[in-house]
Structures are given as structure tokens and as C-alpha cells.
Length: 200
Image (cartoon, one colour):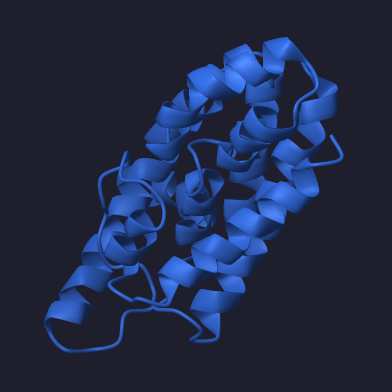
């Protein structure tokens, strides 16, 4: 009875509105100086792992995996860690007029490749920075929409494996879905990320 009662609000996270809301709250919390992932991971991780396990069983049985909305929360960190910061780091490295941001780009590029975003969050900084906070949240929402469209309409496979978090793009996307189409789609998302961040 207790598990059933507690599962009702938690299961709402595995819906499109719930996944979007949780992910946006994670990013907003980061902007306000709170580690949003640590706040919400106790809520999202059990649901995400259960969804991966269910799809892995289907895949192993030769059946088609299904789309779980909780997978959209993974879009928060596909391209350079939380907030998809790889494009921002490369823009700082290549285009920044500020010497400080240029040096920051050099120092952050390797962690960003391996999807570690803390140097960007604290170094750019994104935390307490409303200017960089706008594309930080805006691109994630677009990224989430791309993931939903691609998985839901069969443009790429559904997620079946909880791949290592620090595996770089586009290998992470491939191993999650075991679908080669996920790799070029991640490159497209990376380009979109750069276009959105460039004016900021």
C-alpha cells in the first residue's frame, strides 16, 4: 500500500510533462547555485534504470524496445555534461575575444569531451549568470524535443543500455541505443547547440 501511494507522484516523472518539468528544474537550480542533479537523482534514477532494464530485456528477446519519456531527461547531458556545454567550450576556445574565456576554453575542453560540465558551470560561470543561463535552458528544451521526435518516430532507436556517463559523444549515443543513426543525430544536435549559444 505504501509503495503504491508513493509510486503515484514518482511515476509522473516518466511522462512527457513530468520529464520536461524535472529537467528544466534541474537546470534552473544549477543557475541558482544548487546542484540540481543531486536533488533530483534519487527521484529519477530508479525510474531511468527500470526503463533501461525493461528495454534491454525486450532487445535481448528480439522485440522492439519502447519509448519511455524518462529517457528525455538524458538529453540534459548528451553533449558535454549537464547543460550540454561542449559547444560553449569550443566557442570560447575559438571565438572568445576575452583572454580569460579563451584560457577557460583550453582548460575545459577535455572534461567537456568526457561529459564533465562542472568546470563550465563554475568557470564560465553559468551559475548565477543569467546571460549564459538562457541558452543553457533553451537548448536543453530543443534537445529534448529532438530526442523525443527521433525516438518516437523511429528516426533512431530507443535507449536500451545505460552506458557509462563519461563516454564521449557520439559513442555514448550509439551505445545507449545500439543504433548507428544516433551518432549523426548527436552531431546535428551539437551544431544546433553552437548556433544557439553563439550570440550569448
